[in-house]
Amino acid sequence: MFRLIKAIIDFLSNLDQRRGPNGSTPSSDSEDAKKKVKRLSVIITSVFVVLAILSSIYTIDPGEVGVVQRFGKLSSFSDPGLHFKIPFVDGLTKVNVEKVRRVEIGFRSERARMNVLQESLMITKDENIVDAQAIIQWKIKDPGHFLFRVANSELTIKNTAEVALRSVIGVTKIDDALTTGRDEIQVRTKEFLQELLGSYTSGVQITDVKLQIVDPPEEVKDAFNEVVRAKEDKERLINEAKAFFEDVIPKARGEAEKMIREAEAYREQRISTAQGDTSRFNQIYSEYKKDKDVTWTRIYLEKLESILQRPKKVIGTDSSSGAINLLPLKEVFKD
Image (tube, rainbow, N blue to C red; front, top):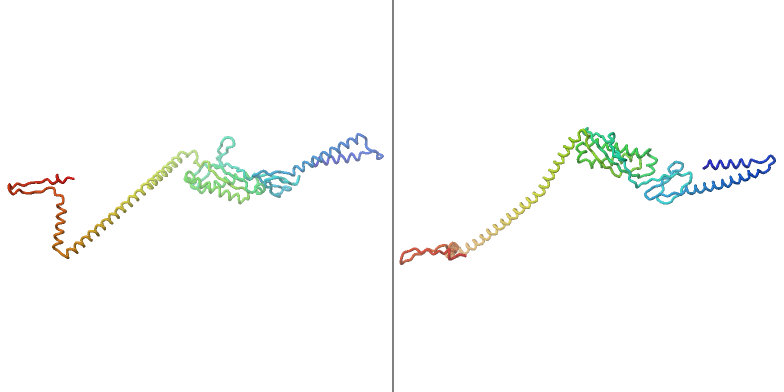
């Protein structure tokens, strides 16, 4: 644009210098050409002014941050809305700070899933090899740091994520990595990766780390799977035993409590009975001391009454014939 304007100005200057030897006015053709050039310069200048005005107005959408650079140097940030900048001086880069991006470690899924063994094969704490694949989700936290502090931020995130995952796998035993330690690996990898990127002032926030697979190499995969299944069976049996324990122990405790309550009730009953017998004996003894014969006769009759209360048979003799008569009182006194 500047070159075009300069060329027009030079052309107009040359036209001013084209005069006759006596200072006469240019020819009619030259006058027409000069008028056309002036009109063209006015049009170009107007277009230039319009473009300058339009380039000074910009809009930032929701979820974005505008990064303004003045002569290539960071100048300011713009929030969502309508803004102005100096045309041809200020540059603008829009950064989406809400979009969640992802990095794949150990595989690629752009078209068809493809394993990348150079990234996925890792050594565990007990010097075994595992095939680990993960997805790292991240978003931009500080647009200024993201654009200006780290060159090729996405490649840096990918390489740093691989380093973090290898470091965590390297301090984890293979049994834990293949079975119960996956959640811990994800948490520790996320924390370590965020710490590394923070030390780089990358302006990136790690939102999640998701392990896709953690498997032994194909050559020994079947043997490791047998081990894993055996451990799963062990855990299942332990859980079943715990469930049986939780079912039986409360019942046993309930039965024990019931027996204790019955024993306590029996004890209270025996104590009450003994106390009653003692009280009755004391009363009888008190009466006995007052009149021994009467009391003795009373006790004797009461005992005899209790013994002969429901007689089964009555035996009698007939004085005239001397025969023995049996009266079956058992049949008479049937309930």
